[in-house]
Image (cartoon, rainbow, N blue to C red; front, side):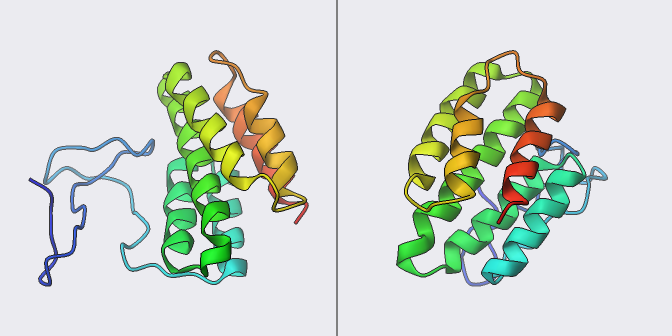
Length: 148
């Protein structure tokens, strides 16, 4: 059963490890992005870059997902795509190269047409293989995002 807040909205109270994997209730997980995080564009990019620089793509995904939930309609595909690419990076960290490729492809398709640096981010993401080095992949996506 999924955790819910007092108003019935889904919330995930389970702790997570540094790679975003769920841990048992009561375990000491790492700090997470709050469920009600609603950043501006600039804040989302800054926070997402910071988490990528710390090799925490799962956390960057949560940042971009937070922006996706509150973004204007014309930006929603961009933020969802960036979140999917970060989940792909998380899958690489966890050793799931096949799952990573699926998410890279989906994310890249969503961010096409948003111009630089997002076109370059998408091209970089679709250039990874199942056996790509996770840290190198994260660093490349970070470099491309820093061009914005």
